[in-house]
Length: 373
Image 1 (cartoon, rainbow, N blue to C red):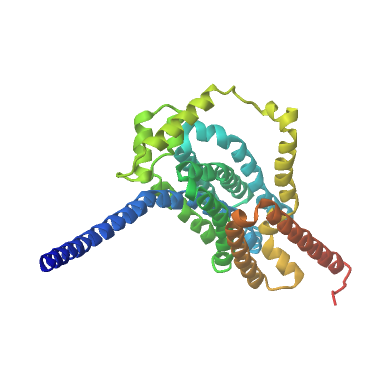
Image 2 (image 1 turned 135 degrees about the horizontal axis):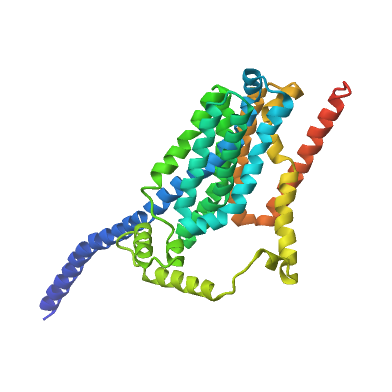
């Protein structure tokens, strides 16, 4: 009996071992398929984000165009300082108009439609700059690129936020600001090697990628749900999440959210001035206003001439500035969720104050033929 029992135990052990050997590959294969499915689910989100941030890169290339081209444009077209100052600053007027109109446009023709329109304005602007023979066409081109910038500043982060999953949303939307810095930096660097007309043509490259890429990626599912296009909404969400993903829960959540929005009373601009919103408006708008009054845009527009006026080689200074800008922006995007918004605001504001004091003092002393010891 003992021998028979031992044999049964041995057979059972062998069967368990064989089952484990059979099960182990199946578990491994299952885990591998799950991992691959997750990767596939996110491929379209990553591709859509890459296409969208080409608009952010275009934003940066427009902002960084005037600095490396100042001397060449003034020499070729015989511009005075006042004429070139108008050329440099008119970009911001176009951006303001674009920012004001971006919301209604994105709601009316969709996020992809708004990006197409922005790209068209930028393409027209770059071509006008390339073929310019005088101040008028140059300023019109600059104004057009500014308008495209303004629309991009709104629609790109909104589009990325609407197509992303919750775990990716923060990281992907932060790429918008990083690509703006990259666009400025690339314009600065290649602007030291190209003519001002060639640099304008180079600005067409991200616009072309964006325009062609928009034919590949889906529209924002949230916008499609908002306008009631149910079939297109489900197709877009399916493309973004993968053909094997279960989108029923997310689709129901989006539709419930849109129904809730429809029930809310329509807001207007004057609602912002209600007492309960006043503090938030002052803080939010104040941060944006004082950021611009800190002089960042002016320094970006005239970086090359600032270094040249200070006696530092403009090409070297521009390249160093470009590299530092991208590195600091990348560092900020990685730290923002770890240390919070307020500490980063305090650190960056301190740096801006110190930089403005040093730059202003340097030029103040320079006008009186004094040198810093």
